[in-house]
Image (tube, rainbow, N blue to C red; front, side, top):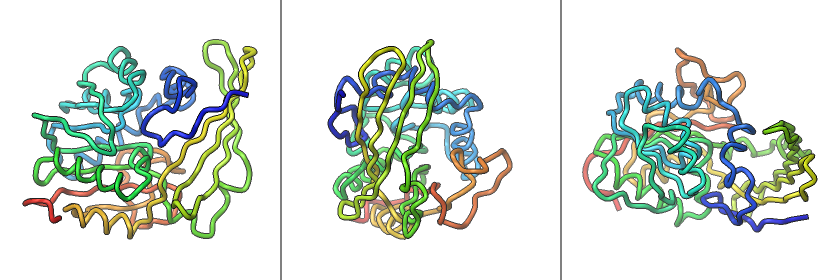
Length: 278
């Protein structure tokens, strides 16, 4: 078996990270033909009056960035994966795509009215220092009053609940004539406050199995409110659903919820005026 070392989620650990290094395979594994994530993000931006300049941080294959561009916004998509950026420029044109590590970045000469960070990308900040780096970087590139819109897993869901941890989850799909099977196991590393994932890939093309490891920071709602306030953000909305990856999923016209108990967490925060409080 081929084994990759653990990735912090911000970059592929090796050239064998199937989804990160093969963006078309990623889109086949996680299809979004209705652009639900992008539509939800656009709804949040419109609902809270964001300006037109948007940074999609951790943009991946560029699907959501392209949707926001199509909605009339001036979009910059940022990711650390060059394979993803190359795919985005070719298959989802419109936004300006740049390389950036979300844990700490500068984009000289660029100011944004909103930063969008979807699909748990924020949770690739595993340590407090990385989370501080993310929020400091986001605040630095936002205009006063600008929005941070994020969608992620909810750490509070795992307090006493084990349904996502009790057994491996198996998914199968076909891409370019090859059948792929992924077996995913999750477990909570309480000391590091991480949700760790082991995923084993097999395919019917005769290739050797590939094992990959990654992790997300488990952030709790009150913890998130606290660290956002410390970095000069006012939380406008923080709720578990509806969202693009909830059941049932968000649909146009759905208002934000109020609970923070389910598996996903949705955040809208505004950069306050004035200097960084720290």
